[in-house]
Length: 105
Image 1 (cartoon, rainbow, N blue to C red):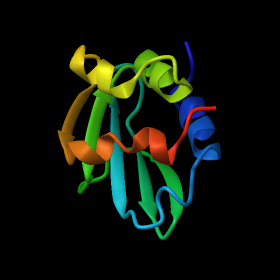
Image 2 (image 1 turned 30 degrees about the vertical axis):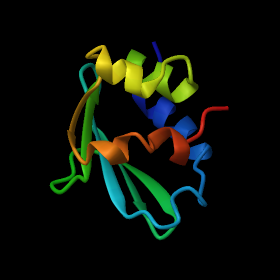
Image 3 (image 1 turned 60 degrees about the horizontal axis):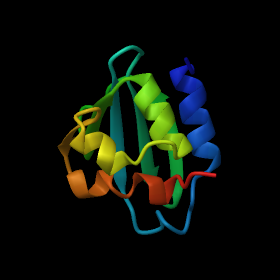
Image 4 (image 1 turned 120 degrees about the vertical axis):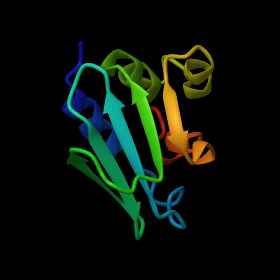
């Protein structure tokens, strides 16, 4: 199983600045089997922090395997959501842009 921090670090290396140029958002990740993390996207940059943000734009709940599969492109995020593997709260439409901002290789 992948380490959650490694998954996020890999995700950040694929950050697409042009896809996020107009975005100002906080993605909170509540991981069932790891510490929570949040990714802040502002001013065309993405930063990762461990912990919980008190004003996340969208909160996504899942286990690290699901996170790894979605971010590697093995699993479609919308399908995972429909199958109940991902729980989302807040700006759900923003969640659908995650793979545009962090495209799979």
